Length: 199
Image (cartoon, rainbow, N blue to C red; front, side, top):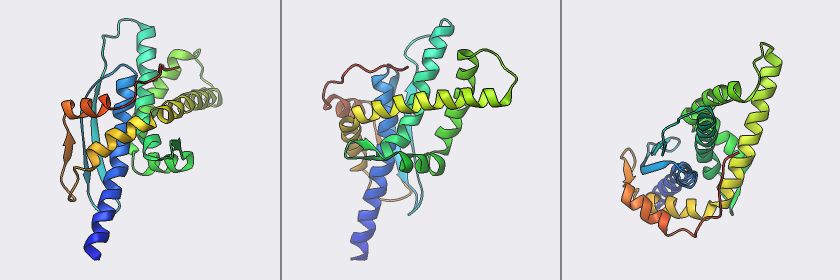
C-alpha cells in the first residue's frame, strides 16, 4: 500500500510539473517561437524542476519587433504557472499565483525583469515611483488576463502534451524528456488552434 501511495504521489507531481512545462511549450509554439524539447524531474515530495527550449523565430530588427517579442515572451513565462493550475479547462488564479511565487521563481524573476523593460518602451519616461508602479501594474494586468485566456483556449492541447511527458516519469531525482520530435508529435495530436495573438 505504501508503495502504491508513493507511486500515485510521484505521478501527481510529474503531471503538475509537466503541465507547467507544457504551458510554456504550447504557448510558445502557438505564439510563433521556435520550440525544442522539454524535460522534468521530480526531486522529492515538495519540489521538482523542469525546462523547455524556446527561442525567437526571427531577428528583432526594430523597436516594434522588440516590444512584440517582449510581450509574447512574458506571456510564455507566465503560461507555466497558469497551466499548472488548470482545472476543468479553467485557470485557478489564486493557485497559479501560489505556484508562481513558490515553484516558478525563475519564471517570476524573468518576467518581472522583462516587464520593467517593456514598461520603459510603452510609457513615457517618468521619475515618479508611484506612476512607474501604476504602469507596471497596468501592464501586468493586461498580460496576465491575455495569457489566462490563451492558456484556457489551449488547455486541451497543454494537457495532451503534459500527459505525453508525465507518463515517462517512473522515479525521483532523474530527468525525463520529450525530444523535439516527440513534443511536436504530441502537439500535432491537438485540435487545430484558433488564431492566437499577443496584446
